Length: 247
Image 1 (cartoon, one colour):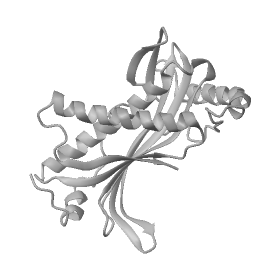
Image 2 (cartoon, helix red, strand yellow; image 1 turned 120 degrees about the vertical axis):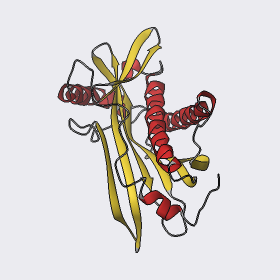
Image 3 (tube, one colour; image 1 turned 180 degrees about the horizontal axis):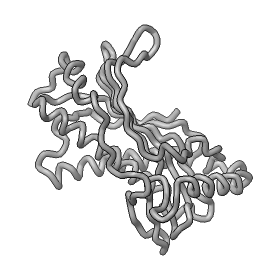
Image 4 (cartoon, rainbow, N blue to C red; image 1 turned 135 degrees about the vertical axis):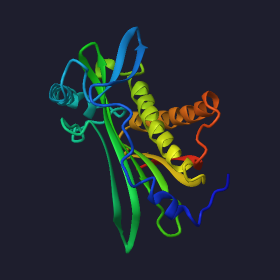
């Protein structure tokens, strides 16, 4: 298997022509775990017996109630919940000929994103929103895969027991599912492609930085697991390392 850097532009035009399928749909469970003697379930958007409206409304209320406590803490950051949505809790799209500014453009870009909500019973106790961008190469650069965490927040009473870790692991699981689909599409062309792979976020607290490090660690673990559980692993989506960008 050879990595043809000169041909990467044309290699990605077809794989990025159609949206990547979603791994989980709104109301679907992503991860179940026990933390601190309690059972938590991470759902896409909302609890299976609830609604996106109820989930977003309750989380926004809990954000407001915890604002004073979060403002006084160096470990957590007060959020507005601006990334919470009742409509876009799981989505996938593609664009062509996207203008990057400075006279540069990307021939193709695939994106998918999720809104994940951690529940204790029927009560939402934390959430995170993130988007994965897979972009064709700009002249002189590798094609890129970026996993951007938009917001992460946990209700104060449920912090310190691993709810954030469950959300970070869920991000890694869903991101790797997208990479596996991309790998499958590239395999049909029988050529590997070298990408830059970055996990990034705007960081406003020490817990936010810790969350991003956890996400990178889970991502590495799940990519390594692919090679153990499957003889194929990721053979056509190649990268030298996972970069971490704290902004």
